[in-house]
Length: 160
Image (cartoon, rainbow, N blue to C red; front, top):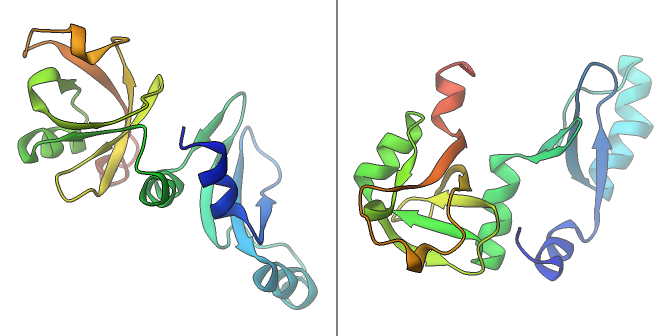
């Protein structure tokens, strides 16, 4: 989504921790120092591994789903695979709505099937699935071009 080099740059000098058990595993990135502290000191004191630590990278199940946190960090590095929407659309998207063509302010090429949605201040507000292959060939402003996959409001709505 953000380019091999940009992703490699972020994960340089980081260790991955994958939680155990359940239908899904959550993935976290920590520094080497955090990793050593967790597994050499904390684990001995608590007699168990921590549930989470560091940066939440995503959920590993049948398919890997990146977290909004990691998407925000990688977008800041790469400035690619994102769609900037106007303020009104950003608010609506945060309530679970899809994105119409007329709401798009800027496109950060290249776009993938799954793209980051950002507000005018370049804050990541969610992920969307593109419903069209080429935005330039769509002429109807009322046409839905991105379906909401997850948005920051999802957490406030308790995942419903």
